[in-house]
Amino acid sequence: MITLTGLAWLLIFQSLGEVLTRLLHLRLPGPVIGLLLLVAALRLERVRAPVGAAAEVLLSHFSLLFVPVGVGVITHLDLLAQYGLRLLVVLLLSTWLGLIVTALVLRRLLRGGQGEDPAA
Image (cartoon, rainbow, N blue to C red; front, side):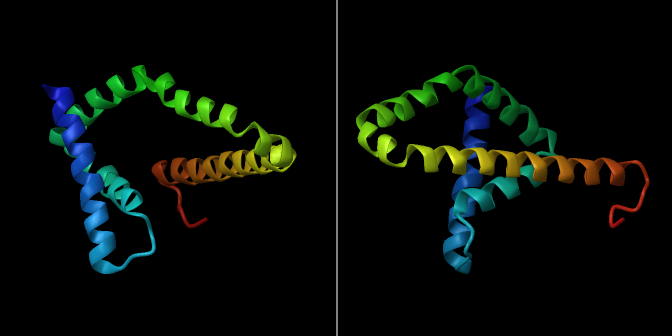
């Protein structure tokens, strides 16, 4: 039951993000707004415990999410042959850029949590 409650929370926040995006004509996608709201709501135990349970179930079946991607790659092998090298370069650069930004943000957050000035 707690897993279903967690899934309901996830859907509620995604829907809330969609509604806010459409009502306020925001440029961010609704799921991104919903995720930001969810991050803020995770401070509440009433939200955190069920979402954690739902996350464990979803992560245990994470490999199933790769099946549609694999099928898509197989059905579009001609595009992969044509643009494969470009795709590889873009994937590598974006992955490294994401890792670098994540490391910098984590470093700044850890410094801020130790009493140092986070603006430094």
